[in-house]
Image (cartoon, rainbow, N blue to C red; front, side, top):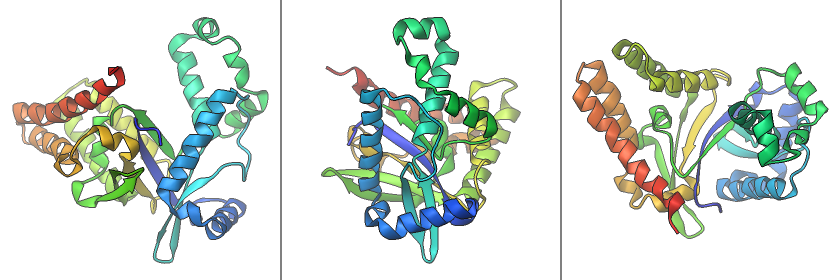
Amino acid sequence: MVPYVAYLRVYEPLSAFEDAEAARWAAYAEERAEAHDSVAVLRAEQHTSLTAVLNAPTLAAPIPGDEGAYVLREGSDLFVCPYDMRLRSWLALAELIDELGDAHLRLLAPGSLEYVSPEFMSWRSEHPEAVPHIRQQTWQIPPVWFLLVESAEREFYNVDGNLSMRMRTPIVRARKRVARAHSVVRRSFEEDPISDLIAELGGWLESFHPHSRVELDYAGLARLLGDLEEDTSPEDVAAAVSALAAGQVQEATSAYERVVTRWQAVRMSEYAN
């Protein structure tokens, strides 16, 4: 497993999908026992991603039935988090184009713009509201992600002989936490980039079914953090918001800096020889 990536996922109930797609995911969950093993699914997703990078294929329009998914069962309820690999790849390339511009990107990666097929462009224009169910971050976890969860929701699991951790919560609870944090930050600062990050994260959550589940997964990144039971990132972010709401700016700053410092230390592993 890739050791430096963390994930934020949304699992939607089958009722969130159109009938044909819902039936396909129900059959997928029934026929593939490994779909219920998140570690096995993560390995498969990363393998698909790395293979795509190595083969540098044209990014075509999403094809129903072409990708896998994470599956979560709670009692009789089934939740699905599709890979959305092609959509994620296209959005990543589009972001790179916006950041570098066509000319610079052609110099750095000749032919890369041709990887986006006309079919995909057409599909995207017809589905402008489509957003990926998965976000990923390398070498760190963005502090705003911790707004969504609480340490009481954490679950430890084993991956490749190492302990990792995930936290899962109903999306309605995550939305309330984000909305409160955004309100507090906006009241405290007229213009602040963190407020924009929180608003963008909240907008992403609003794209999904209200009965969905949100999961923050440390995945392979956990091995760089040390003792997971001592990680207080969710508490520190929550403490920063509460202190800010009470007008205790210094306390809020101290709590937030604890999170930033903790994950800066992890991020330095990217530059380790």
